[in-house]
Length: 27
Image (cartoon, rainbow, N blue to C red; front, side, top):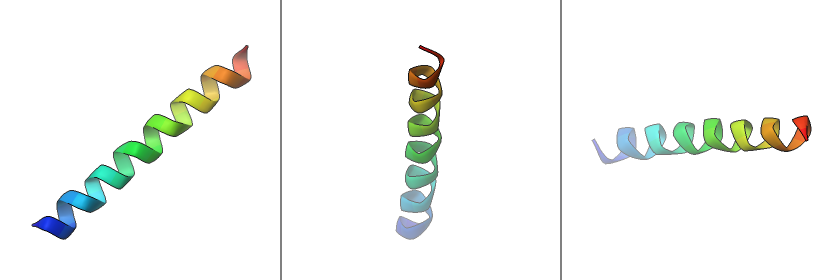
């Protein structure tokens, strides 16, 4: 369970970072 939760957290952070980078590129 711990490893699965960590994996989900890493994927979520990865998607959030991509979203922020997309916003910065638009400006």
